[in-house]
Amino acid sequence: MKLNAIAKLFILQLNFILTSFSFILYNFQVELKTKEFIRPITENCRIRHKHSRIKTKIIEFSVQLEILIKNKWAPVIRYDTAHGVAHRDQIHPDGTVDKTPIFCLDYGDALVFAERDLISNWRVYIDKFLKEVENK
Amino acid sequence: MTEQEFVEKNIRLSFEFSKYVLANPELDECIPDNAQIVFLIENDPEFNEKNRALAEKQREPGQPVVIVRIKGLAPPLVSRLIEPKLELAPGL
Image 1 (cartoon, each protein chain N blue to C red):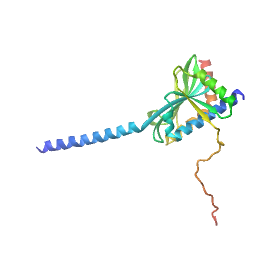
Image 2 (cartoon, rainbow over the protein chains, first blue to last red):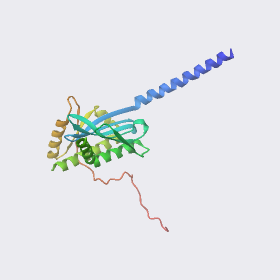
Image 3 (cartoon, chains in turn orange, green):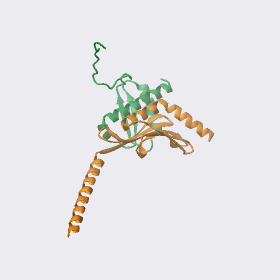
Image 4 (cartoon, chains in turn blue, red):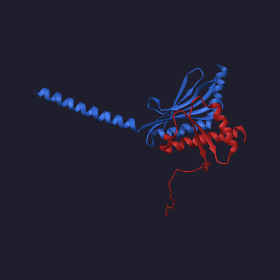
């Protein structure tokens, strides 16, 4: 009898926890907004920008410098927050990737840093990538 | 306007646009997903013509386009501090 009461209490508590969790998850999904857009730089070069946020707080992002090679857009540099850490991926023509972490606690700051780096150094990144394509 | 000047101007606008969108979440609603963003500057027909041509060349079939009309750019060295007040501390 006592055991039955404990089990009932346990089920009730579990139900409460699950309901609360669903409520939080639902609100998170409702509030979370994702946007993706593309800005051309030159005929063969563009920046793809994607961010998810709740109001003004950036929850995740990806900013990617892309080059058009043989009629296909290929990523050259990608800043993103995959695996929960803001970092830069330098993508080589053979598909290998060099990862460099960004030491920014706030993803909004990291995103602005990423954008600033790409607009300042896009030519360097593209030239380096094209040299690697030539030497492949 | 040389090609380099055009590209530099366009990429500067591109960066400032990103910052503007981040600061103004309501703009997300005006941008369809995967849209191509095209900047046009008031009273700069040469830039606008080049940018329209560039956008057209890069556009993918069915890709939505968002035109961003801009009056101009503020001076680059704008601080984010709000009304800072400087005072000379006496005796230091």
